[in-house]
Length: 151
View (cartoon, rainbow, N blue to C red):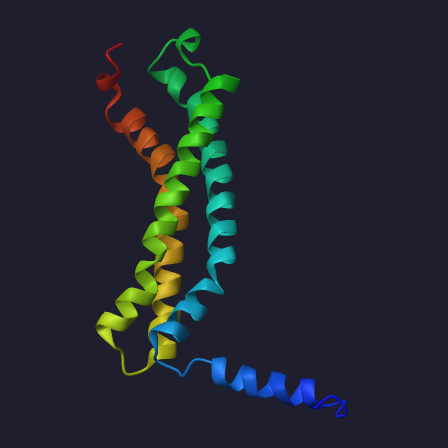
């Protein structure tokens, strides 16, 4: 082995073959889901920023219809608190992300690749669209239930 310059390459190839998970196992499910976690988190960060921007637009364009402008405040402190709250919720979303490989093991789908793609994208879009529910619900409340603000 010491005189064989290709021994390391052969050893590495054998090692890789033995570590490669077989399709449909929990290890391959784990690897598949983990390989997409970065995209999921980037989507959550972008959605959080865009949803907060929508919230600011709603606060300064629609909220004055039902509240006095002096009562509408978005300060650096409130932004920081909301940002920390959003990071906490991203942690909760990442805990829920673990359901992907575990549900796959529980369901044992016939077409694993199709199941993974559909499950991933349904979860991704649900998680990305969820932060927009706050400005959307605030808009609905302002437009359809203005008396709820007690003006």
